[in-house]
Length: 118
Image 1 (cartoon, helix red, strand yellow):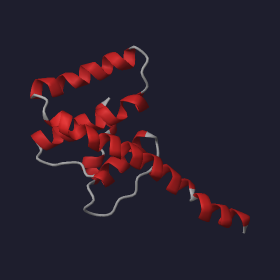
Image 2 (cartoon, one colour):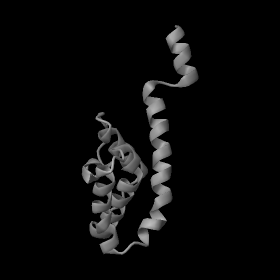
Image 3 (tube, helix red, strand yellow):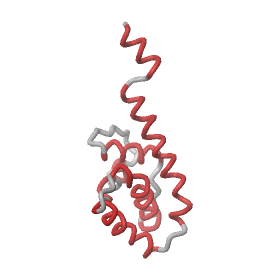
Image 4 (tube, one colour):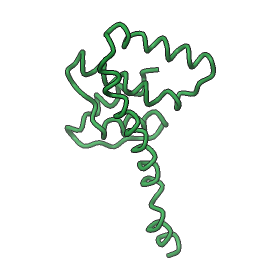
């Protein structure tokens, strides 16, 4: 009973994770106009930039918004497919070692392209 009451106030563990992930999705979406302006070569160079930053000690979680924005922009240019917010959420779940359950047609294959970026 007390657990149910606390869940109603604070939300379930899943609700809290999704709330955190949605904040990151907002950051990724804010980067989209900036990444649209990059040339193909500049977008390609982001991969090496990320590798260098990781080598200097920056965490994967710190790079996640930029890395996902890079994959999204690359996908738009090459495959003419844009990752939607629900796919970004799924990619973050996969990045964190969690299972991402998606329905038919929600873009599981496109979602799976996000975590391997780095």
